[in-house]
Image 1: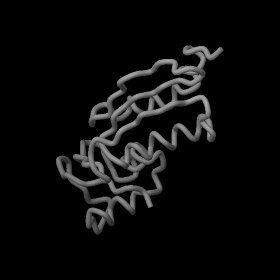
Image 2 (image 1 turned 90 degrees about the vertical axis):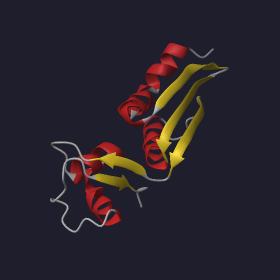
Image 3 (image 1 turned 45 degrees about the vertical axis):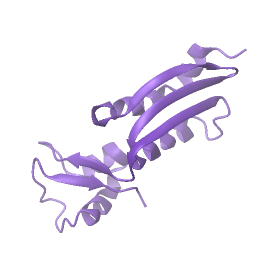
Image 4 (image 1 turned 180 degrees about the vertical axis):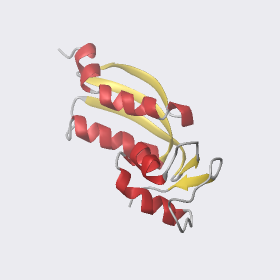
Length: 130
């Protein structure tokens, strides 16, 4: 018989990923046992964040046979973001995509000619990773 605690520990990286985006609207609604599977019900603010959650799921278990999920995108494809003190596009890329190397994609999507010239308070849209 499946044990909720064991499955929850297994999928903790997924729950942690959802938590990383709580400040921009990600919301964990439920973690429970559904038969032999852990049931994760959540809402995310964009396809960008949904893709990041799926990356976490596939890292935990590429087959995710013991996972029942209802993860709903409540927004659009892109993720709005406001530049904060200490940000750079590599840091934002690392946070949103899990890899800093996509900073140029963010720059291009926002018509930023020089990735080193962003301003605190500047509003950008993080695109779905190509």
